[in-house]
Length: 124
Image 1 (cartoon, one colour):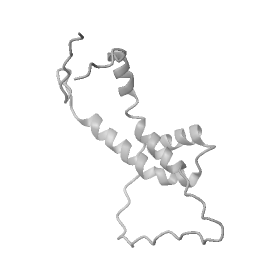
Image 2 (cartoon, helix red, strand yellow; image 1 turned 120 degrees about the horizontal axis):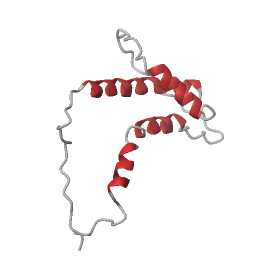
Image 3 (spheres, one colour; image 1 turned 180 degrees about the vertical axis):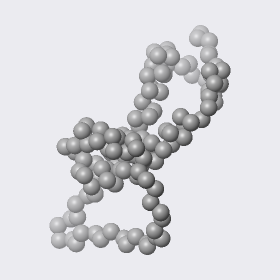
């Protein structure tokens, strides 16, 4: 077994963990910023496939954090993201906000341990 990187320490690990909540928003922003390639000259533009008609589901009220989070994205990435792209990201942002709400409701005590086992290795 190869030794672990001696430059990696708990502080670096905790800093890396701090980025976990931001990663989904970065992925959605990247997906919204991605542009489809332009068609070659002389070829017609591809037509998007028709979406199947889905039965209308009762609309749930929007999450109260949706508007502030969307405004935050608009303030930070307003030059790169259009209003249509922000509207396309709204369901994903709302889903993350609702998941965070569910996570905050789960009761944890101070004595509850994480769901992984950490074993320190001895350095040679």
